[in-house]
Length: 448
Image (cartoon, rainbow, N blue to C red; front, side, top):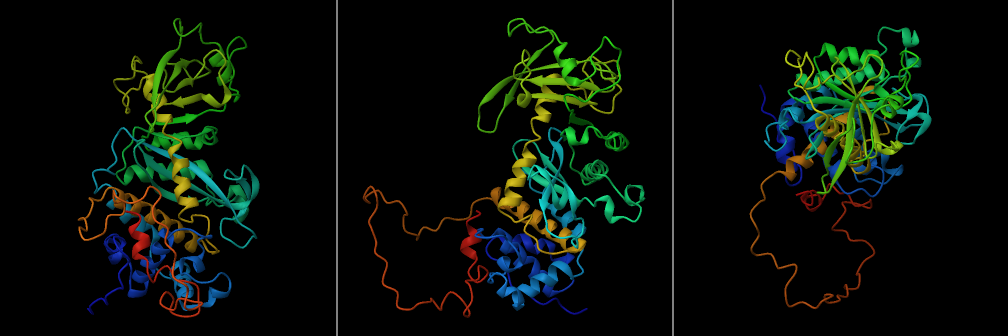
C-alpha cells in the first residue's frame, strides 16, 4: 500500500479538527477540499458564501478558476459519504464532557425552507417557507438539534422532497412527509447515543398521526405544541378545542390559583419569569391518561396568544396509575414547561448556520451536492463548539500590551503612510481578489 501524501494543513486550530476526518476521504484532493471548504465557511462573511466566495474568487467572473472548480468537484462529484462524515462529527461531540448529551436535554425537531429559483434543483418546489412566512419556490430541510439550554448543536438533516418529484405523487412508496422524516431523524439521534428527556416540536407536527406512531415505536417521549383551535370529538357539553379546555380551568388570581400551578422559567441571561401551568381535559387527553394536555401561560385569565402553550405529551403524570410501569419517567408541570421552553434554541442555531455559515447559499442542483454542503456546514458549526471549550493556549509574553495604562483616554491618532502603489502585491498571488485562504490563520484564530 502506498503512503498517503501529506495534505496542506488547515489554518490554526482547524487542522487538528479536520485531521480527525482524514480516514473518511479517499485521496489528497478530498482531504484538501474538506479543509478549504471549512476554511471558507468559517471566514468572515462579506457576501453570500457561494463557491466563488469560499475560494476567494470574484463573483461570476471567477467561477472558472481552478480553485473554484476544485471546490465544485469536491462538493458535487467527489465520492465521499456525507453520512459517514456526519456520523464522525457526532462521535466527536460526546468526547468532550462539556458537549456530552444527558437525559435532561431534548431533541428539537423543526423544518426550515430557503427560497430557490427554477425547477431543476433537487427537492425544489412551491411550498411553505417558514423563514419567509409565505408559500414560495424553495427547498425545505427537516433538522434535529440537541440542546439543554446551555449548548445546542445539529444532529441530522434531510431535505424534504415534494410529492410532484415522484411518479405516483403522495401515493408513491418512496414519498415521505415531513413528520415521517422528522420522526426517523429523532430515532437516528437516539441510536447515535444522544439521549434526551423528550422530543420537542411545534404545532406543525401535532396534526400527523404518523409522527406520533413513529415516536411510540421508537420508545421516544414527546412534548408537542397543539393548535389552540384544533377541534376534536367530545360531548356537546364538553370542550372541543385546547383553548376551550383552558378556559374551563378554574382561576381567580395568583393567591387563589384554582387549577393552575406556578412554574418558574429560568433564561440564559439570568432573569426569571413566573408562568402558570395546568393539566386540562379534552377528548382522549386527561391528566392520568397515556397522553396529557398541558396548558402553560403567563396569564390564565386572558390566555395571551403569544404567551400561551397548549402541549400534548406522553410523559406520565406523577400520580397516574401507569407512572410506575411507564417506559418514561413521570414529569410534573414545571418539567413539561421547562422542556418545551428549550424549543427556541433550534431557532438560535439557525441564526449561526444560516446568517454566518452559509447554509442556504449553495448554488448546486444535485441531491448529493446539497447534502454534502449541509454536512460541511454542520461540521463548521461543531468546530466552533470544539474551540469554545478548548483550553486556552499559552500566553505570548513578548506581545505588546494592547491597553496600556498610560495611554490617552481616546488613544493616539495615527496617520497611515502614503501608499506607494495602487495594489499591494504581497497579499494576492495575481491580479485577483484577495484570497482568504492565503492568510487565514488570523481569521480562524478569531474563533478562539
